[in-house]
Image (cartoon, rainbow, N blue to C red; front, side):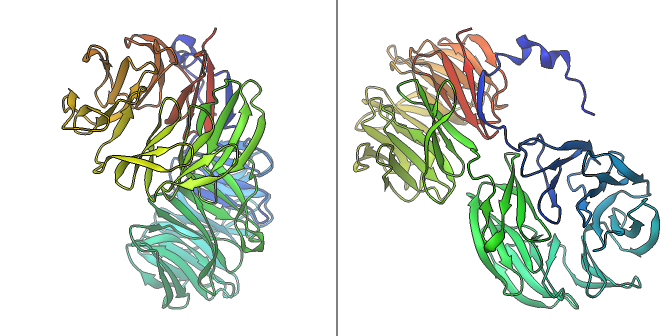
Length: 592
């Protein structure tokens, strides 16, 4: 049972003004990262295991079916019974347990000397195997949890177990390597290595296995003696994570690079990927025993269900929005919301109902930026390629090969786009994407902003400098070198400039050419309202604050998304919207 919120947590003065509306985030979002996932045989249920609880989910419901405490361990074990009616896991005291899938109630729990670290069932479901932290592997009666026998005692912690029914072999992964245990309890170390990433998937005939190793390696081995039959090397700095069995003879593989995770469905016998999709950073994955469905958990703590039928990975909930970016349209009556999968949704600002939508391509999105006129949209995809979209015609043009979505700005009148792309700051004609000028050709800075009148540019690097446009000379230093600079923002009338860094928020008076205020405290982002008399800033705990233009606090905005990516004021300055990695958009009404 969860602890009752403290008085401090429920006091309006402490938690701040709460959002009036929300887009997204009502889907399968959990409070903890799920470092382990399990799925029942037909894919109708999935269990997520976080640091201290097991949660049961259905692809047909956006809310958990139930939550129960489990052992405080980032590798808490779990397995569904073959009939899918029960879930083997641990209690909060670290005891092996069997829970009913209907309501999470305990069928039984069993105390032992060492807490379980791996669990798997025999195919019939009458017995289950439990591997323990001390290396012990025991067989239990699934009816009451009584011990049938100690199968083996390995030298170190058992990290995963799998049963191969044709040969009656139990396959155990440990920190030493991979072992097989036969019906008589004989243990055979088939291959070893400290770099081995625990977890294996078996071929259809049960005589081969696949596994991942450090260094971006994925290997096919003979189960009998560990001989390497085939090997795939991801290359570069990519990481291959342990495979998840995805039906007989198939495996789900996650390959991480700098832009996210490639989720791949592999045919083990052929040792090839038959389908692949690019996602955001996926922490864990599991699939059903019949190979029809899969489930993933992302770094943003979002659970997603997938279809694997026909050898392709398809989302079971393709219309579910995962907001990354949100902006008020210039008319104030509509919102533009962009998500991690590259979907763009135009919504009614009052009802939040969708008016229209389209997708920006096959790749995930890294970031977006709407023009002040509301007619153009910059989209930087997960490969960091920038595209300029015309929202009326749905046509796009490429602006380069590599860009940073956080280093982009439209001119105040919407006529130009300034973008850090391919190692330079370039300006483009916002009407057709034609390159107009190179503003700076040696981009080595953390942030920039062009003034609303288009006559000056402020660049944050080791210090903060302001230059005339076109750029000339060394510029004027307005802030000497101090800590890292994260954001810089002009007020919409151009009279003030806010500079964010790890120690304080600096406000620069543009007219007088001097710093007017310094507010202690690290700030990551700041956005002025249309009048320029207020701003919203975000600290590094993802907390939003509403302030006067002199930096004095008006109020805290509670309930913000985890690490807001962008903050947007409504055109009349009465509402604030924030989108972030919490997979939601929150809207605050400031009129009360």
